[in-house]
Image 1 (cartoon, one colour):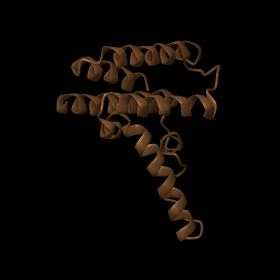
Image 2: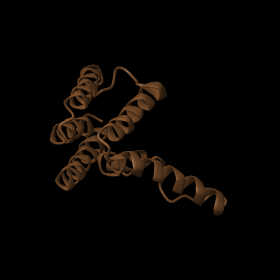
Image 3: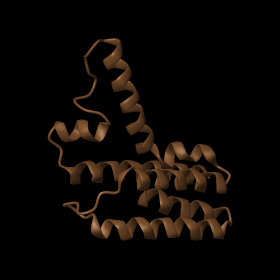
Image 4: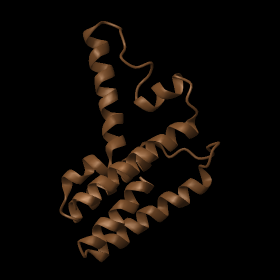
Length: 139
């Protein structure tokens, strides 16, 4: 979400929506403040309430800059996490117990494959950054 917040700051500034840019900056500040306490190893867990707020802010910012489809690029990891859950559950029910991934959502699959949490976060952040750059170029 920190990477997406940076992209929203830039996107809002490009569109001349400096109030939205400030709101995205506040979201970035909140995420970075949380990360101070949640650096590896984690000390504080966010839970559903915090993650739902972050997702809601990403959606609200996308609508504020009048580009709701930009969520698909800025939030590509959110989409992949959700799709991996949907695919896993659907396939599990259709095949009566078989699985596509070792565990869903997809970040747990990579952890079960031997990736460290730090590697998963780094790779997912790089993917998000690249997708944000593509979306910003399109704006």
